[in-house]
Image 1 (cartoon, rainbow, N blue to C red):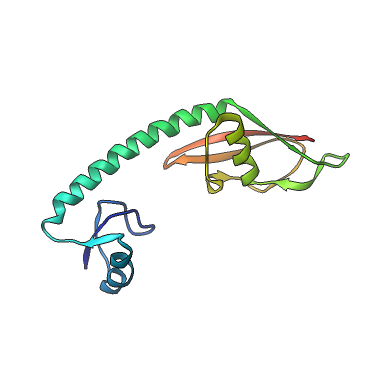
Image 2 (cartoon, rainbow, N blue to C red):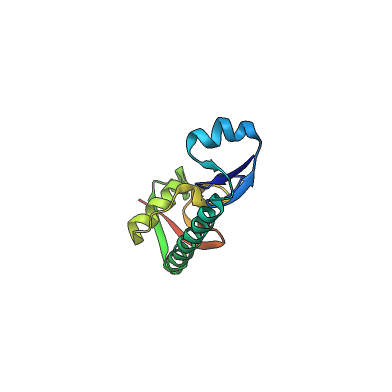
Length: 148
């Protein structure tokens, strides 16, 4: 069954794409949730306008992500945590703590899933992580963990 996607569906396609799916998937999930419409010859024009709107929005989002990347990479974010005398933290610094530090320092709001750490930070000192701001736009985040 050919359907026109009205919103992005992970693993299937993006808004404005016409895709072929099994009829059960379309009938039981895509159509009832409003994620898709049944494609016909008249929906091709609608698909074209959806793709144009998506492309314009993606271009604006990419420009904003590039500007945020410059701001994030220039800054070093300081996170305070309780630590023992040997510099080992009593807890750990995770993605949520890094997102909160970025938000408080720059005003840039990110999802915690955008931050990639090899493992949670457990010692005082410098570290780095990566933040995925947009598809293909990643920023290196410099972090300084200090004792409270």
